[in-house]
Image (cartoon, rainbow, N blue to C red; front, side, top):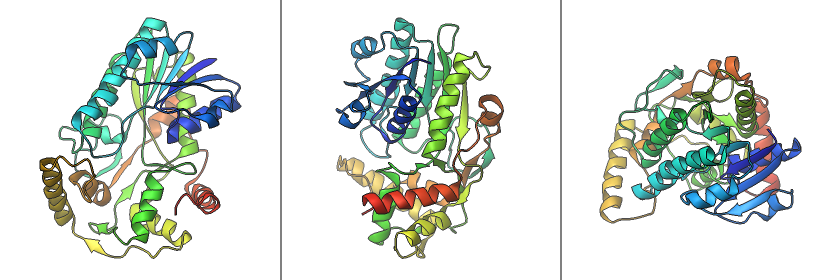
Amino acid sequence: MEKVLVTGGGGFIGKALVGELVKRGIAVAVVGRNPYPELTALGVECYQGDIRDLTFLERVMEGRDTVFHAAAKAGIWGPREEYYSINLTGTVNVLTACRRKGVRQLVYTSTPSVVFDQSSMEGADETAPYARTPLCHYAASKILAEKEVLGAQSNNLNTIALRPHLVWGPGDHHLVPRLLERGRNRTLKIVGNGTNRVDIAYIDNVVHAHILAADHLHAGGCGAGQAFFIGQDEPVLLWSWINELFARMNIAPITANVPFILASVAGLGLEILHTMLRSRQEPKMTRFVAHQLAKSHWFCHNKAKQLLGYHQQVATAEGMDRLTSWLQQTGAGK
């Protein structure tokens, strides 16, 4: 791995991955929607463009040996066409450009949401089928995109899909700050009985998994064409983990509770209302969020350990220390 392109290089995972690749002396180029002066200062080539533009992708992939495809439209609300054009069409374009420009290795950042089908998942492995009834455009579009990535495996293009869950840590400007905002505003409630366990993935561990996957492909490993769950060694009790974070940030713990069925019905109603109004503002509750907050969803990582050599580099307790220190130093959680 010598000349690498990272799509979505300005995002949380992408930026952390770029930083590690630069430390290793690898020549890195980034594709993103905005200019990234902090990456340019590291010697990274930054190309501003859209993964839905195939001609642009072919130009920037010239001479690359590896692509990390982390670009995606995330979130759980927005026009269907945006999710599908970015997450699916954009991914097909990345694959096409790789083939046309002779890129031999591609690591795709997927999500466990591709298999979450409204029931609790406890220790599920990669044999779990894709969700038949995904509850948001993000999950539905990522299912189709992952299928394209794994189906593209060939003698000329090796692919792997990684499924990190609830990525967190320093540099996160979305998940954790959003939790903290809702905690301070007292707009967050425990959904269900509060005993659900979930996988989380500290950012350094996610970066480590991506590099292992690329090295595995370059070595001709047997994991090519397959998906892998990535996370901490043990799942966490979701609401205990959130309340520990809140305690460290001097936010009152969440104790109020709403029954799952009530949250789910309210989510459906708000989805219908926002759709009728053509509102781009995310509803305060959706069915997908209700399920994510109430159900258990944690996965077996044995396959990643056995085939990729994955082991967490940062334990959950240490990660929490690093996260709270970063939040306090930067004010990112205010």
